Length: 167
Ligand code: PNS
Image (tube, rainbow, N blue to C red; front, side):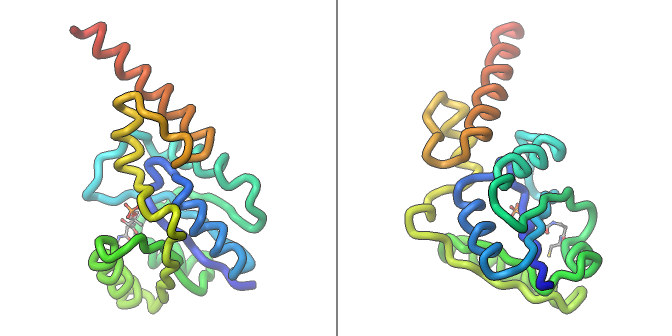
């Protein structure tokens, strides 16, 4: 059984992520989506929320599981007997940091990283911009699954209400 891990922040999971996860699931027997923490980022959704949204989003893709990632992805991959880490590349902007992480992860435990070039119609999809659009009331329905669009609306509605109360 060949296992891949697809790590990321998934804050929140987008159609771009689902494209990569779905394509990985066609190559590997089992794909574990690892919802992790990037120490350089501040998150809109906490770990449990990101986990729940990712679980709901992949529910229809056979062979895909979702787990919270505590600690190093290289250790997680080894503990789950993964053959490779699979990540998406939208373009050169992603490449520098992804190349460095791939090299560091291989240095740590020998785990290989495979990159899937994102589908052309999804190269503009990024969680950070999705959040920005949603925070200003824009439509994100073509960028994220419905469960995520609903969670973003609820989150920003709540934040706007809090701001109103304060102001
Ligand atoms: O979606 P992101 O923010 O690019 O995901 C980054 C993530 C969570 C995959 C990365 O920060 C990670 O692997 N974190 C776990 C801790 C770790 O292994 N850090 C060293 C990476 S070389």
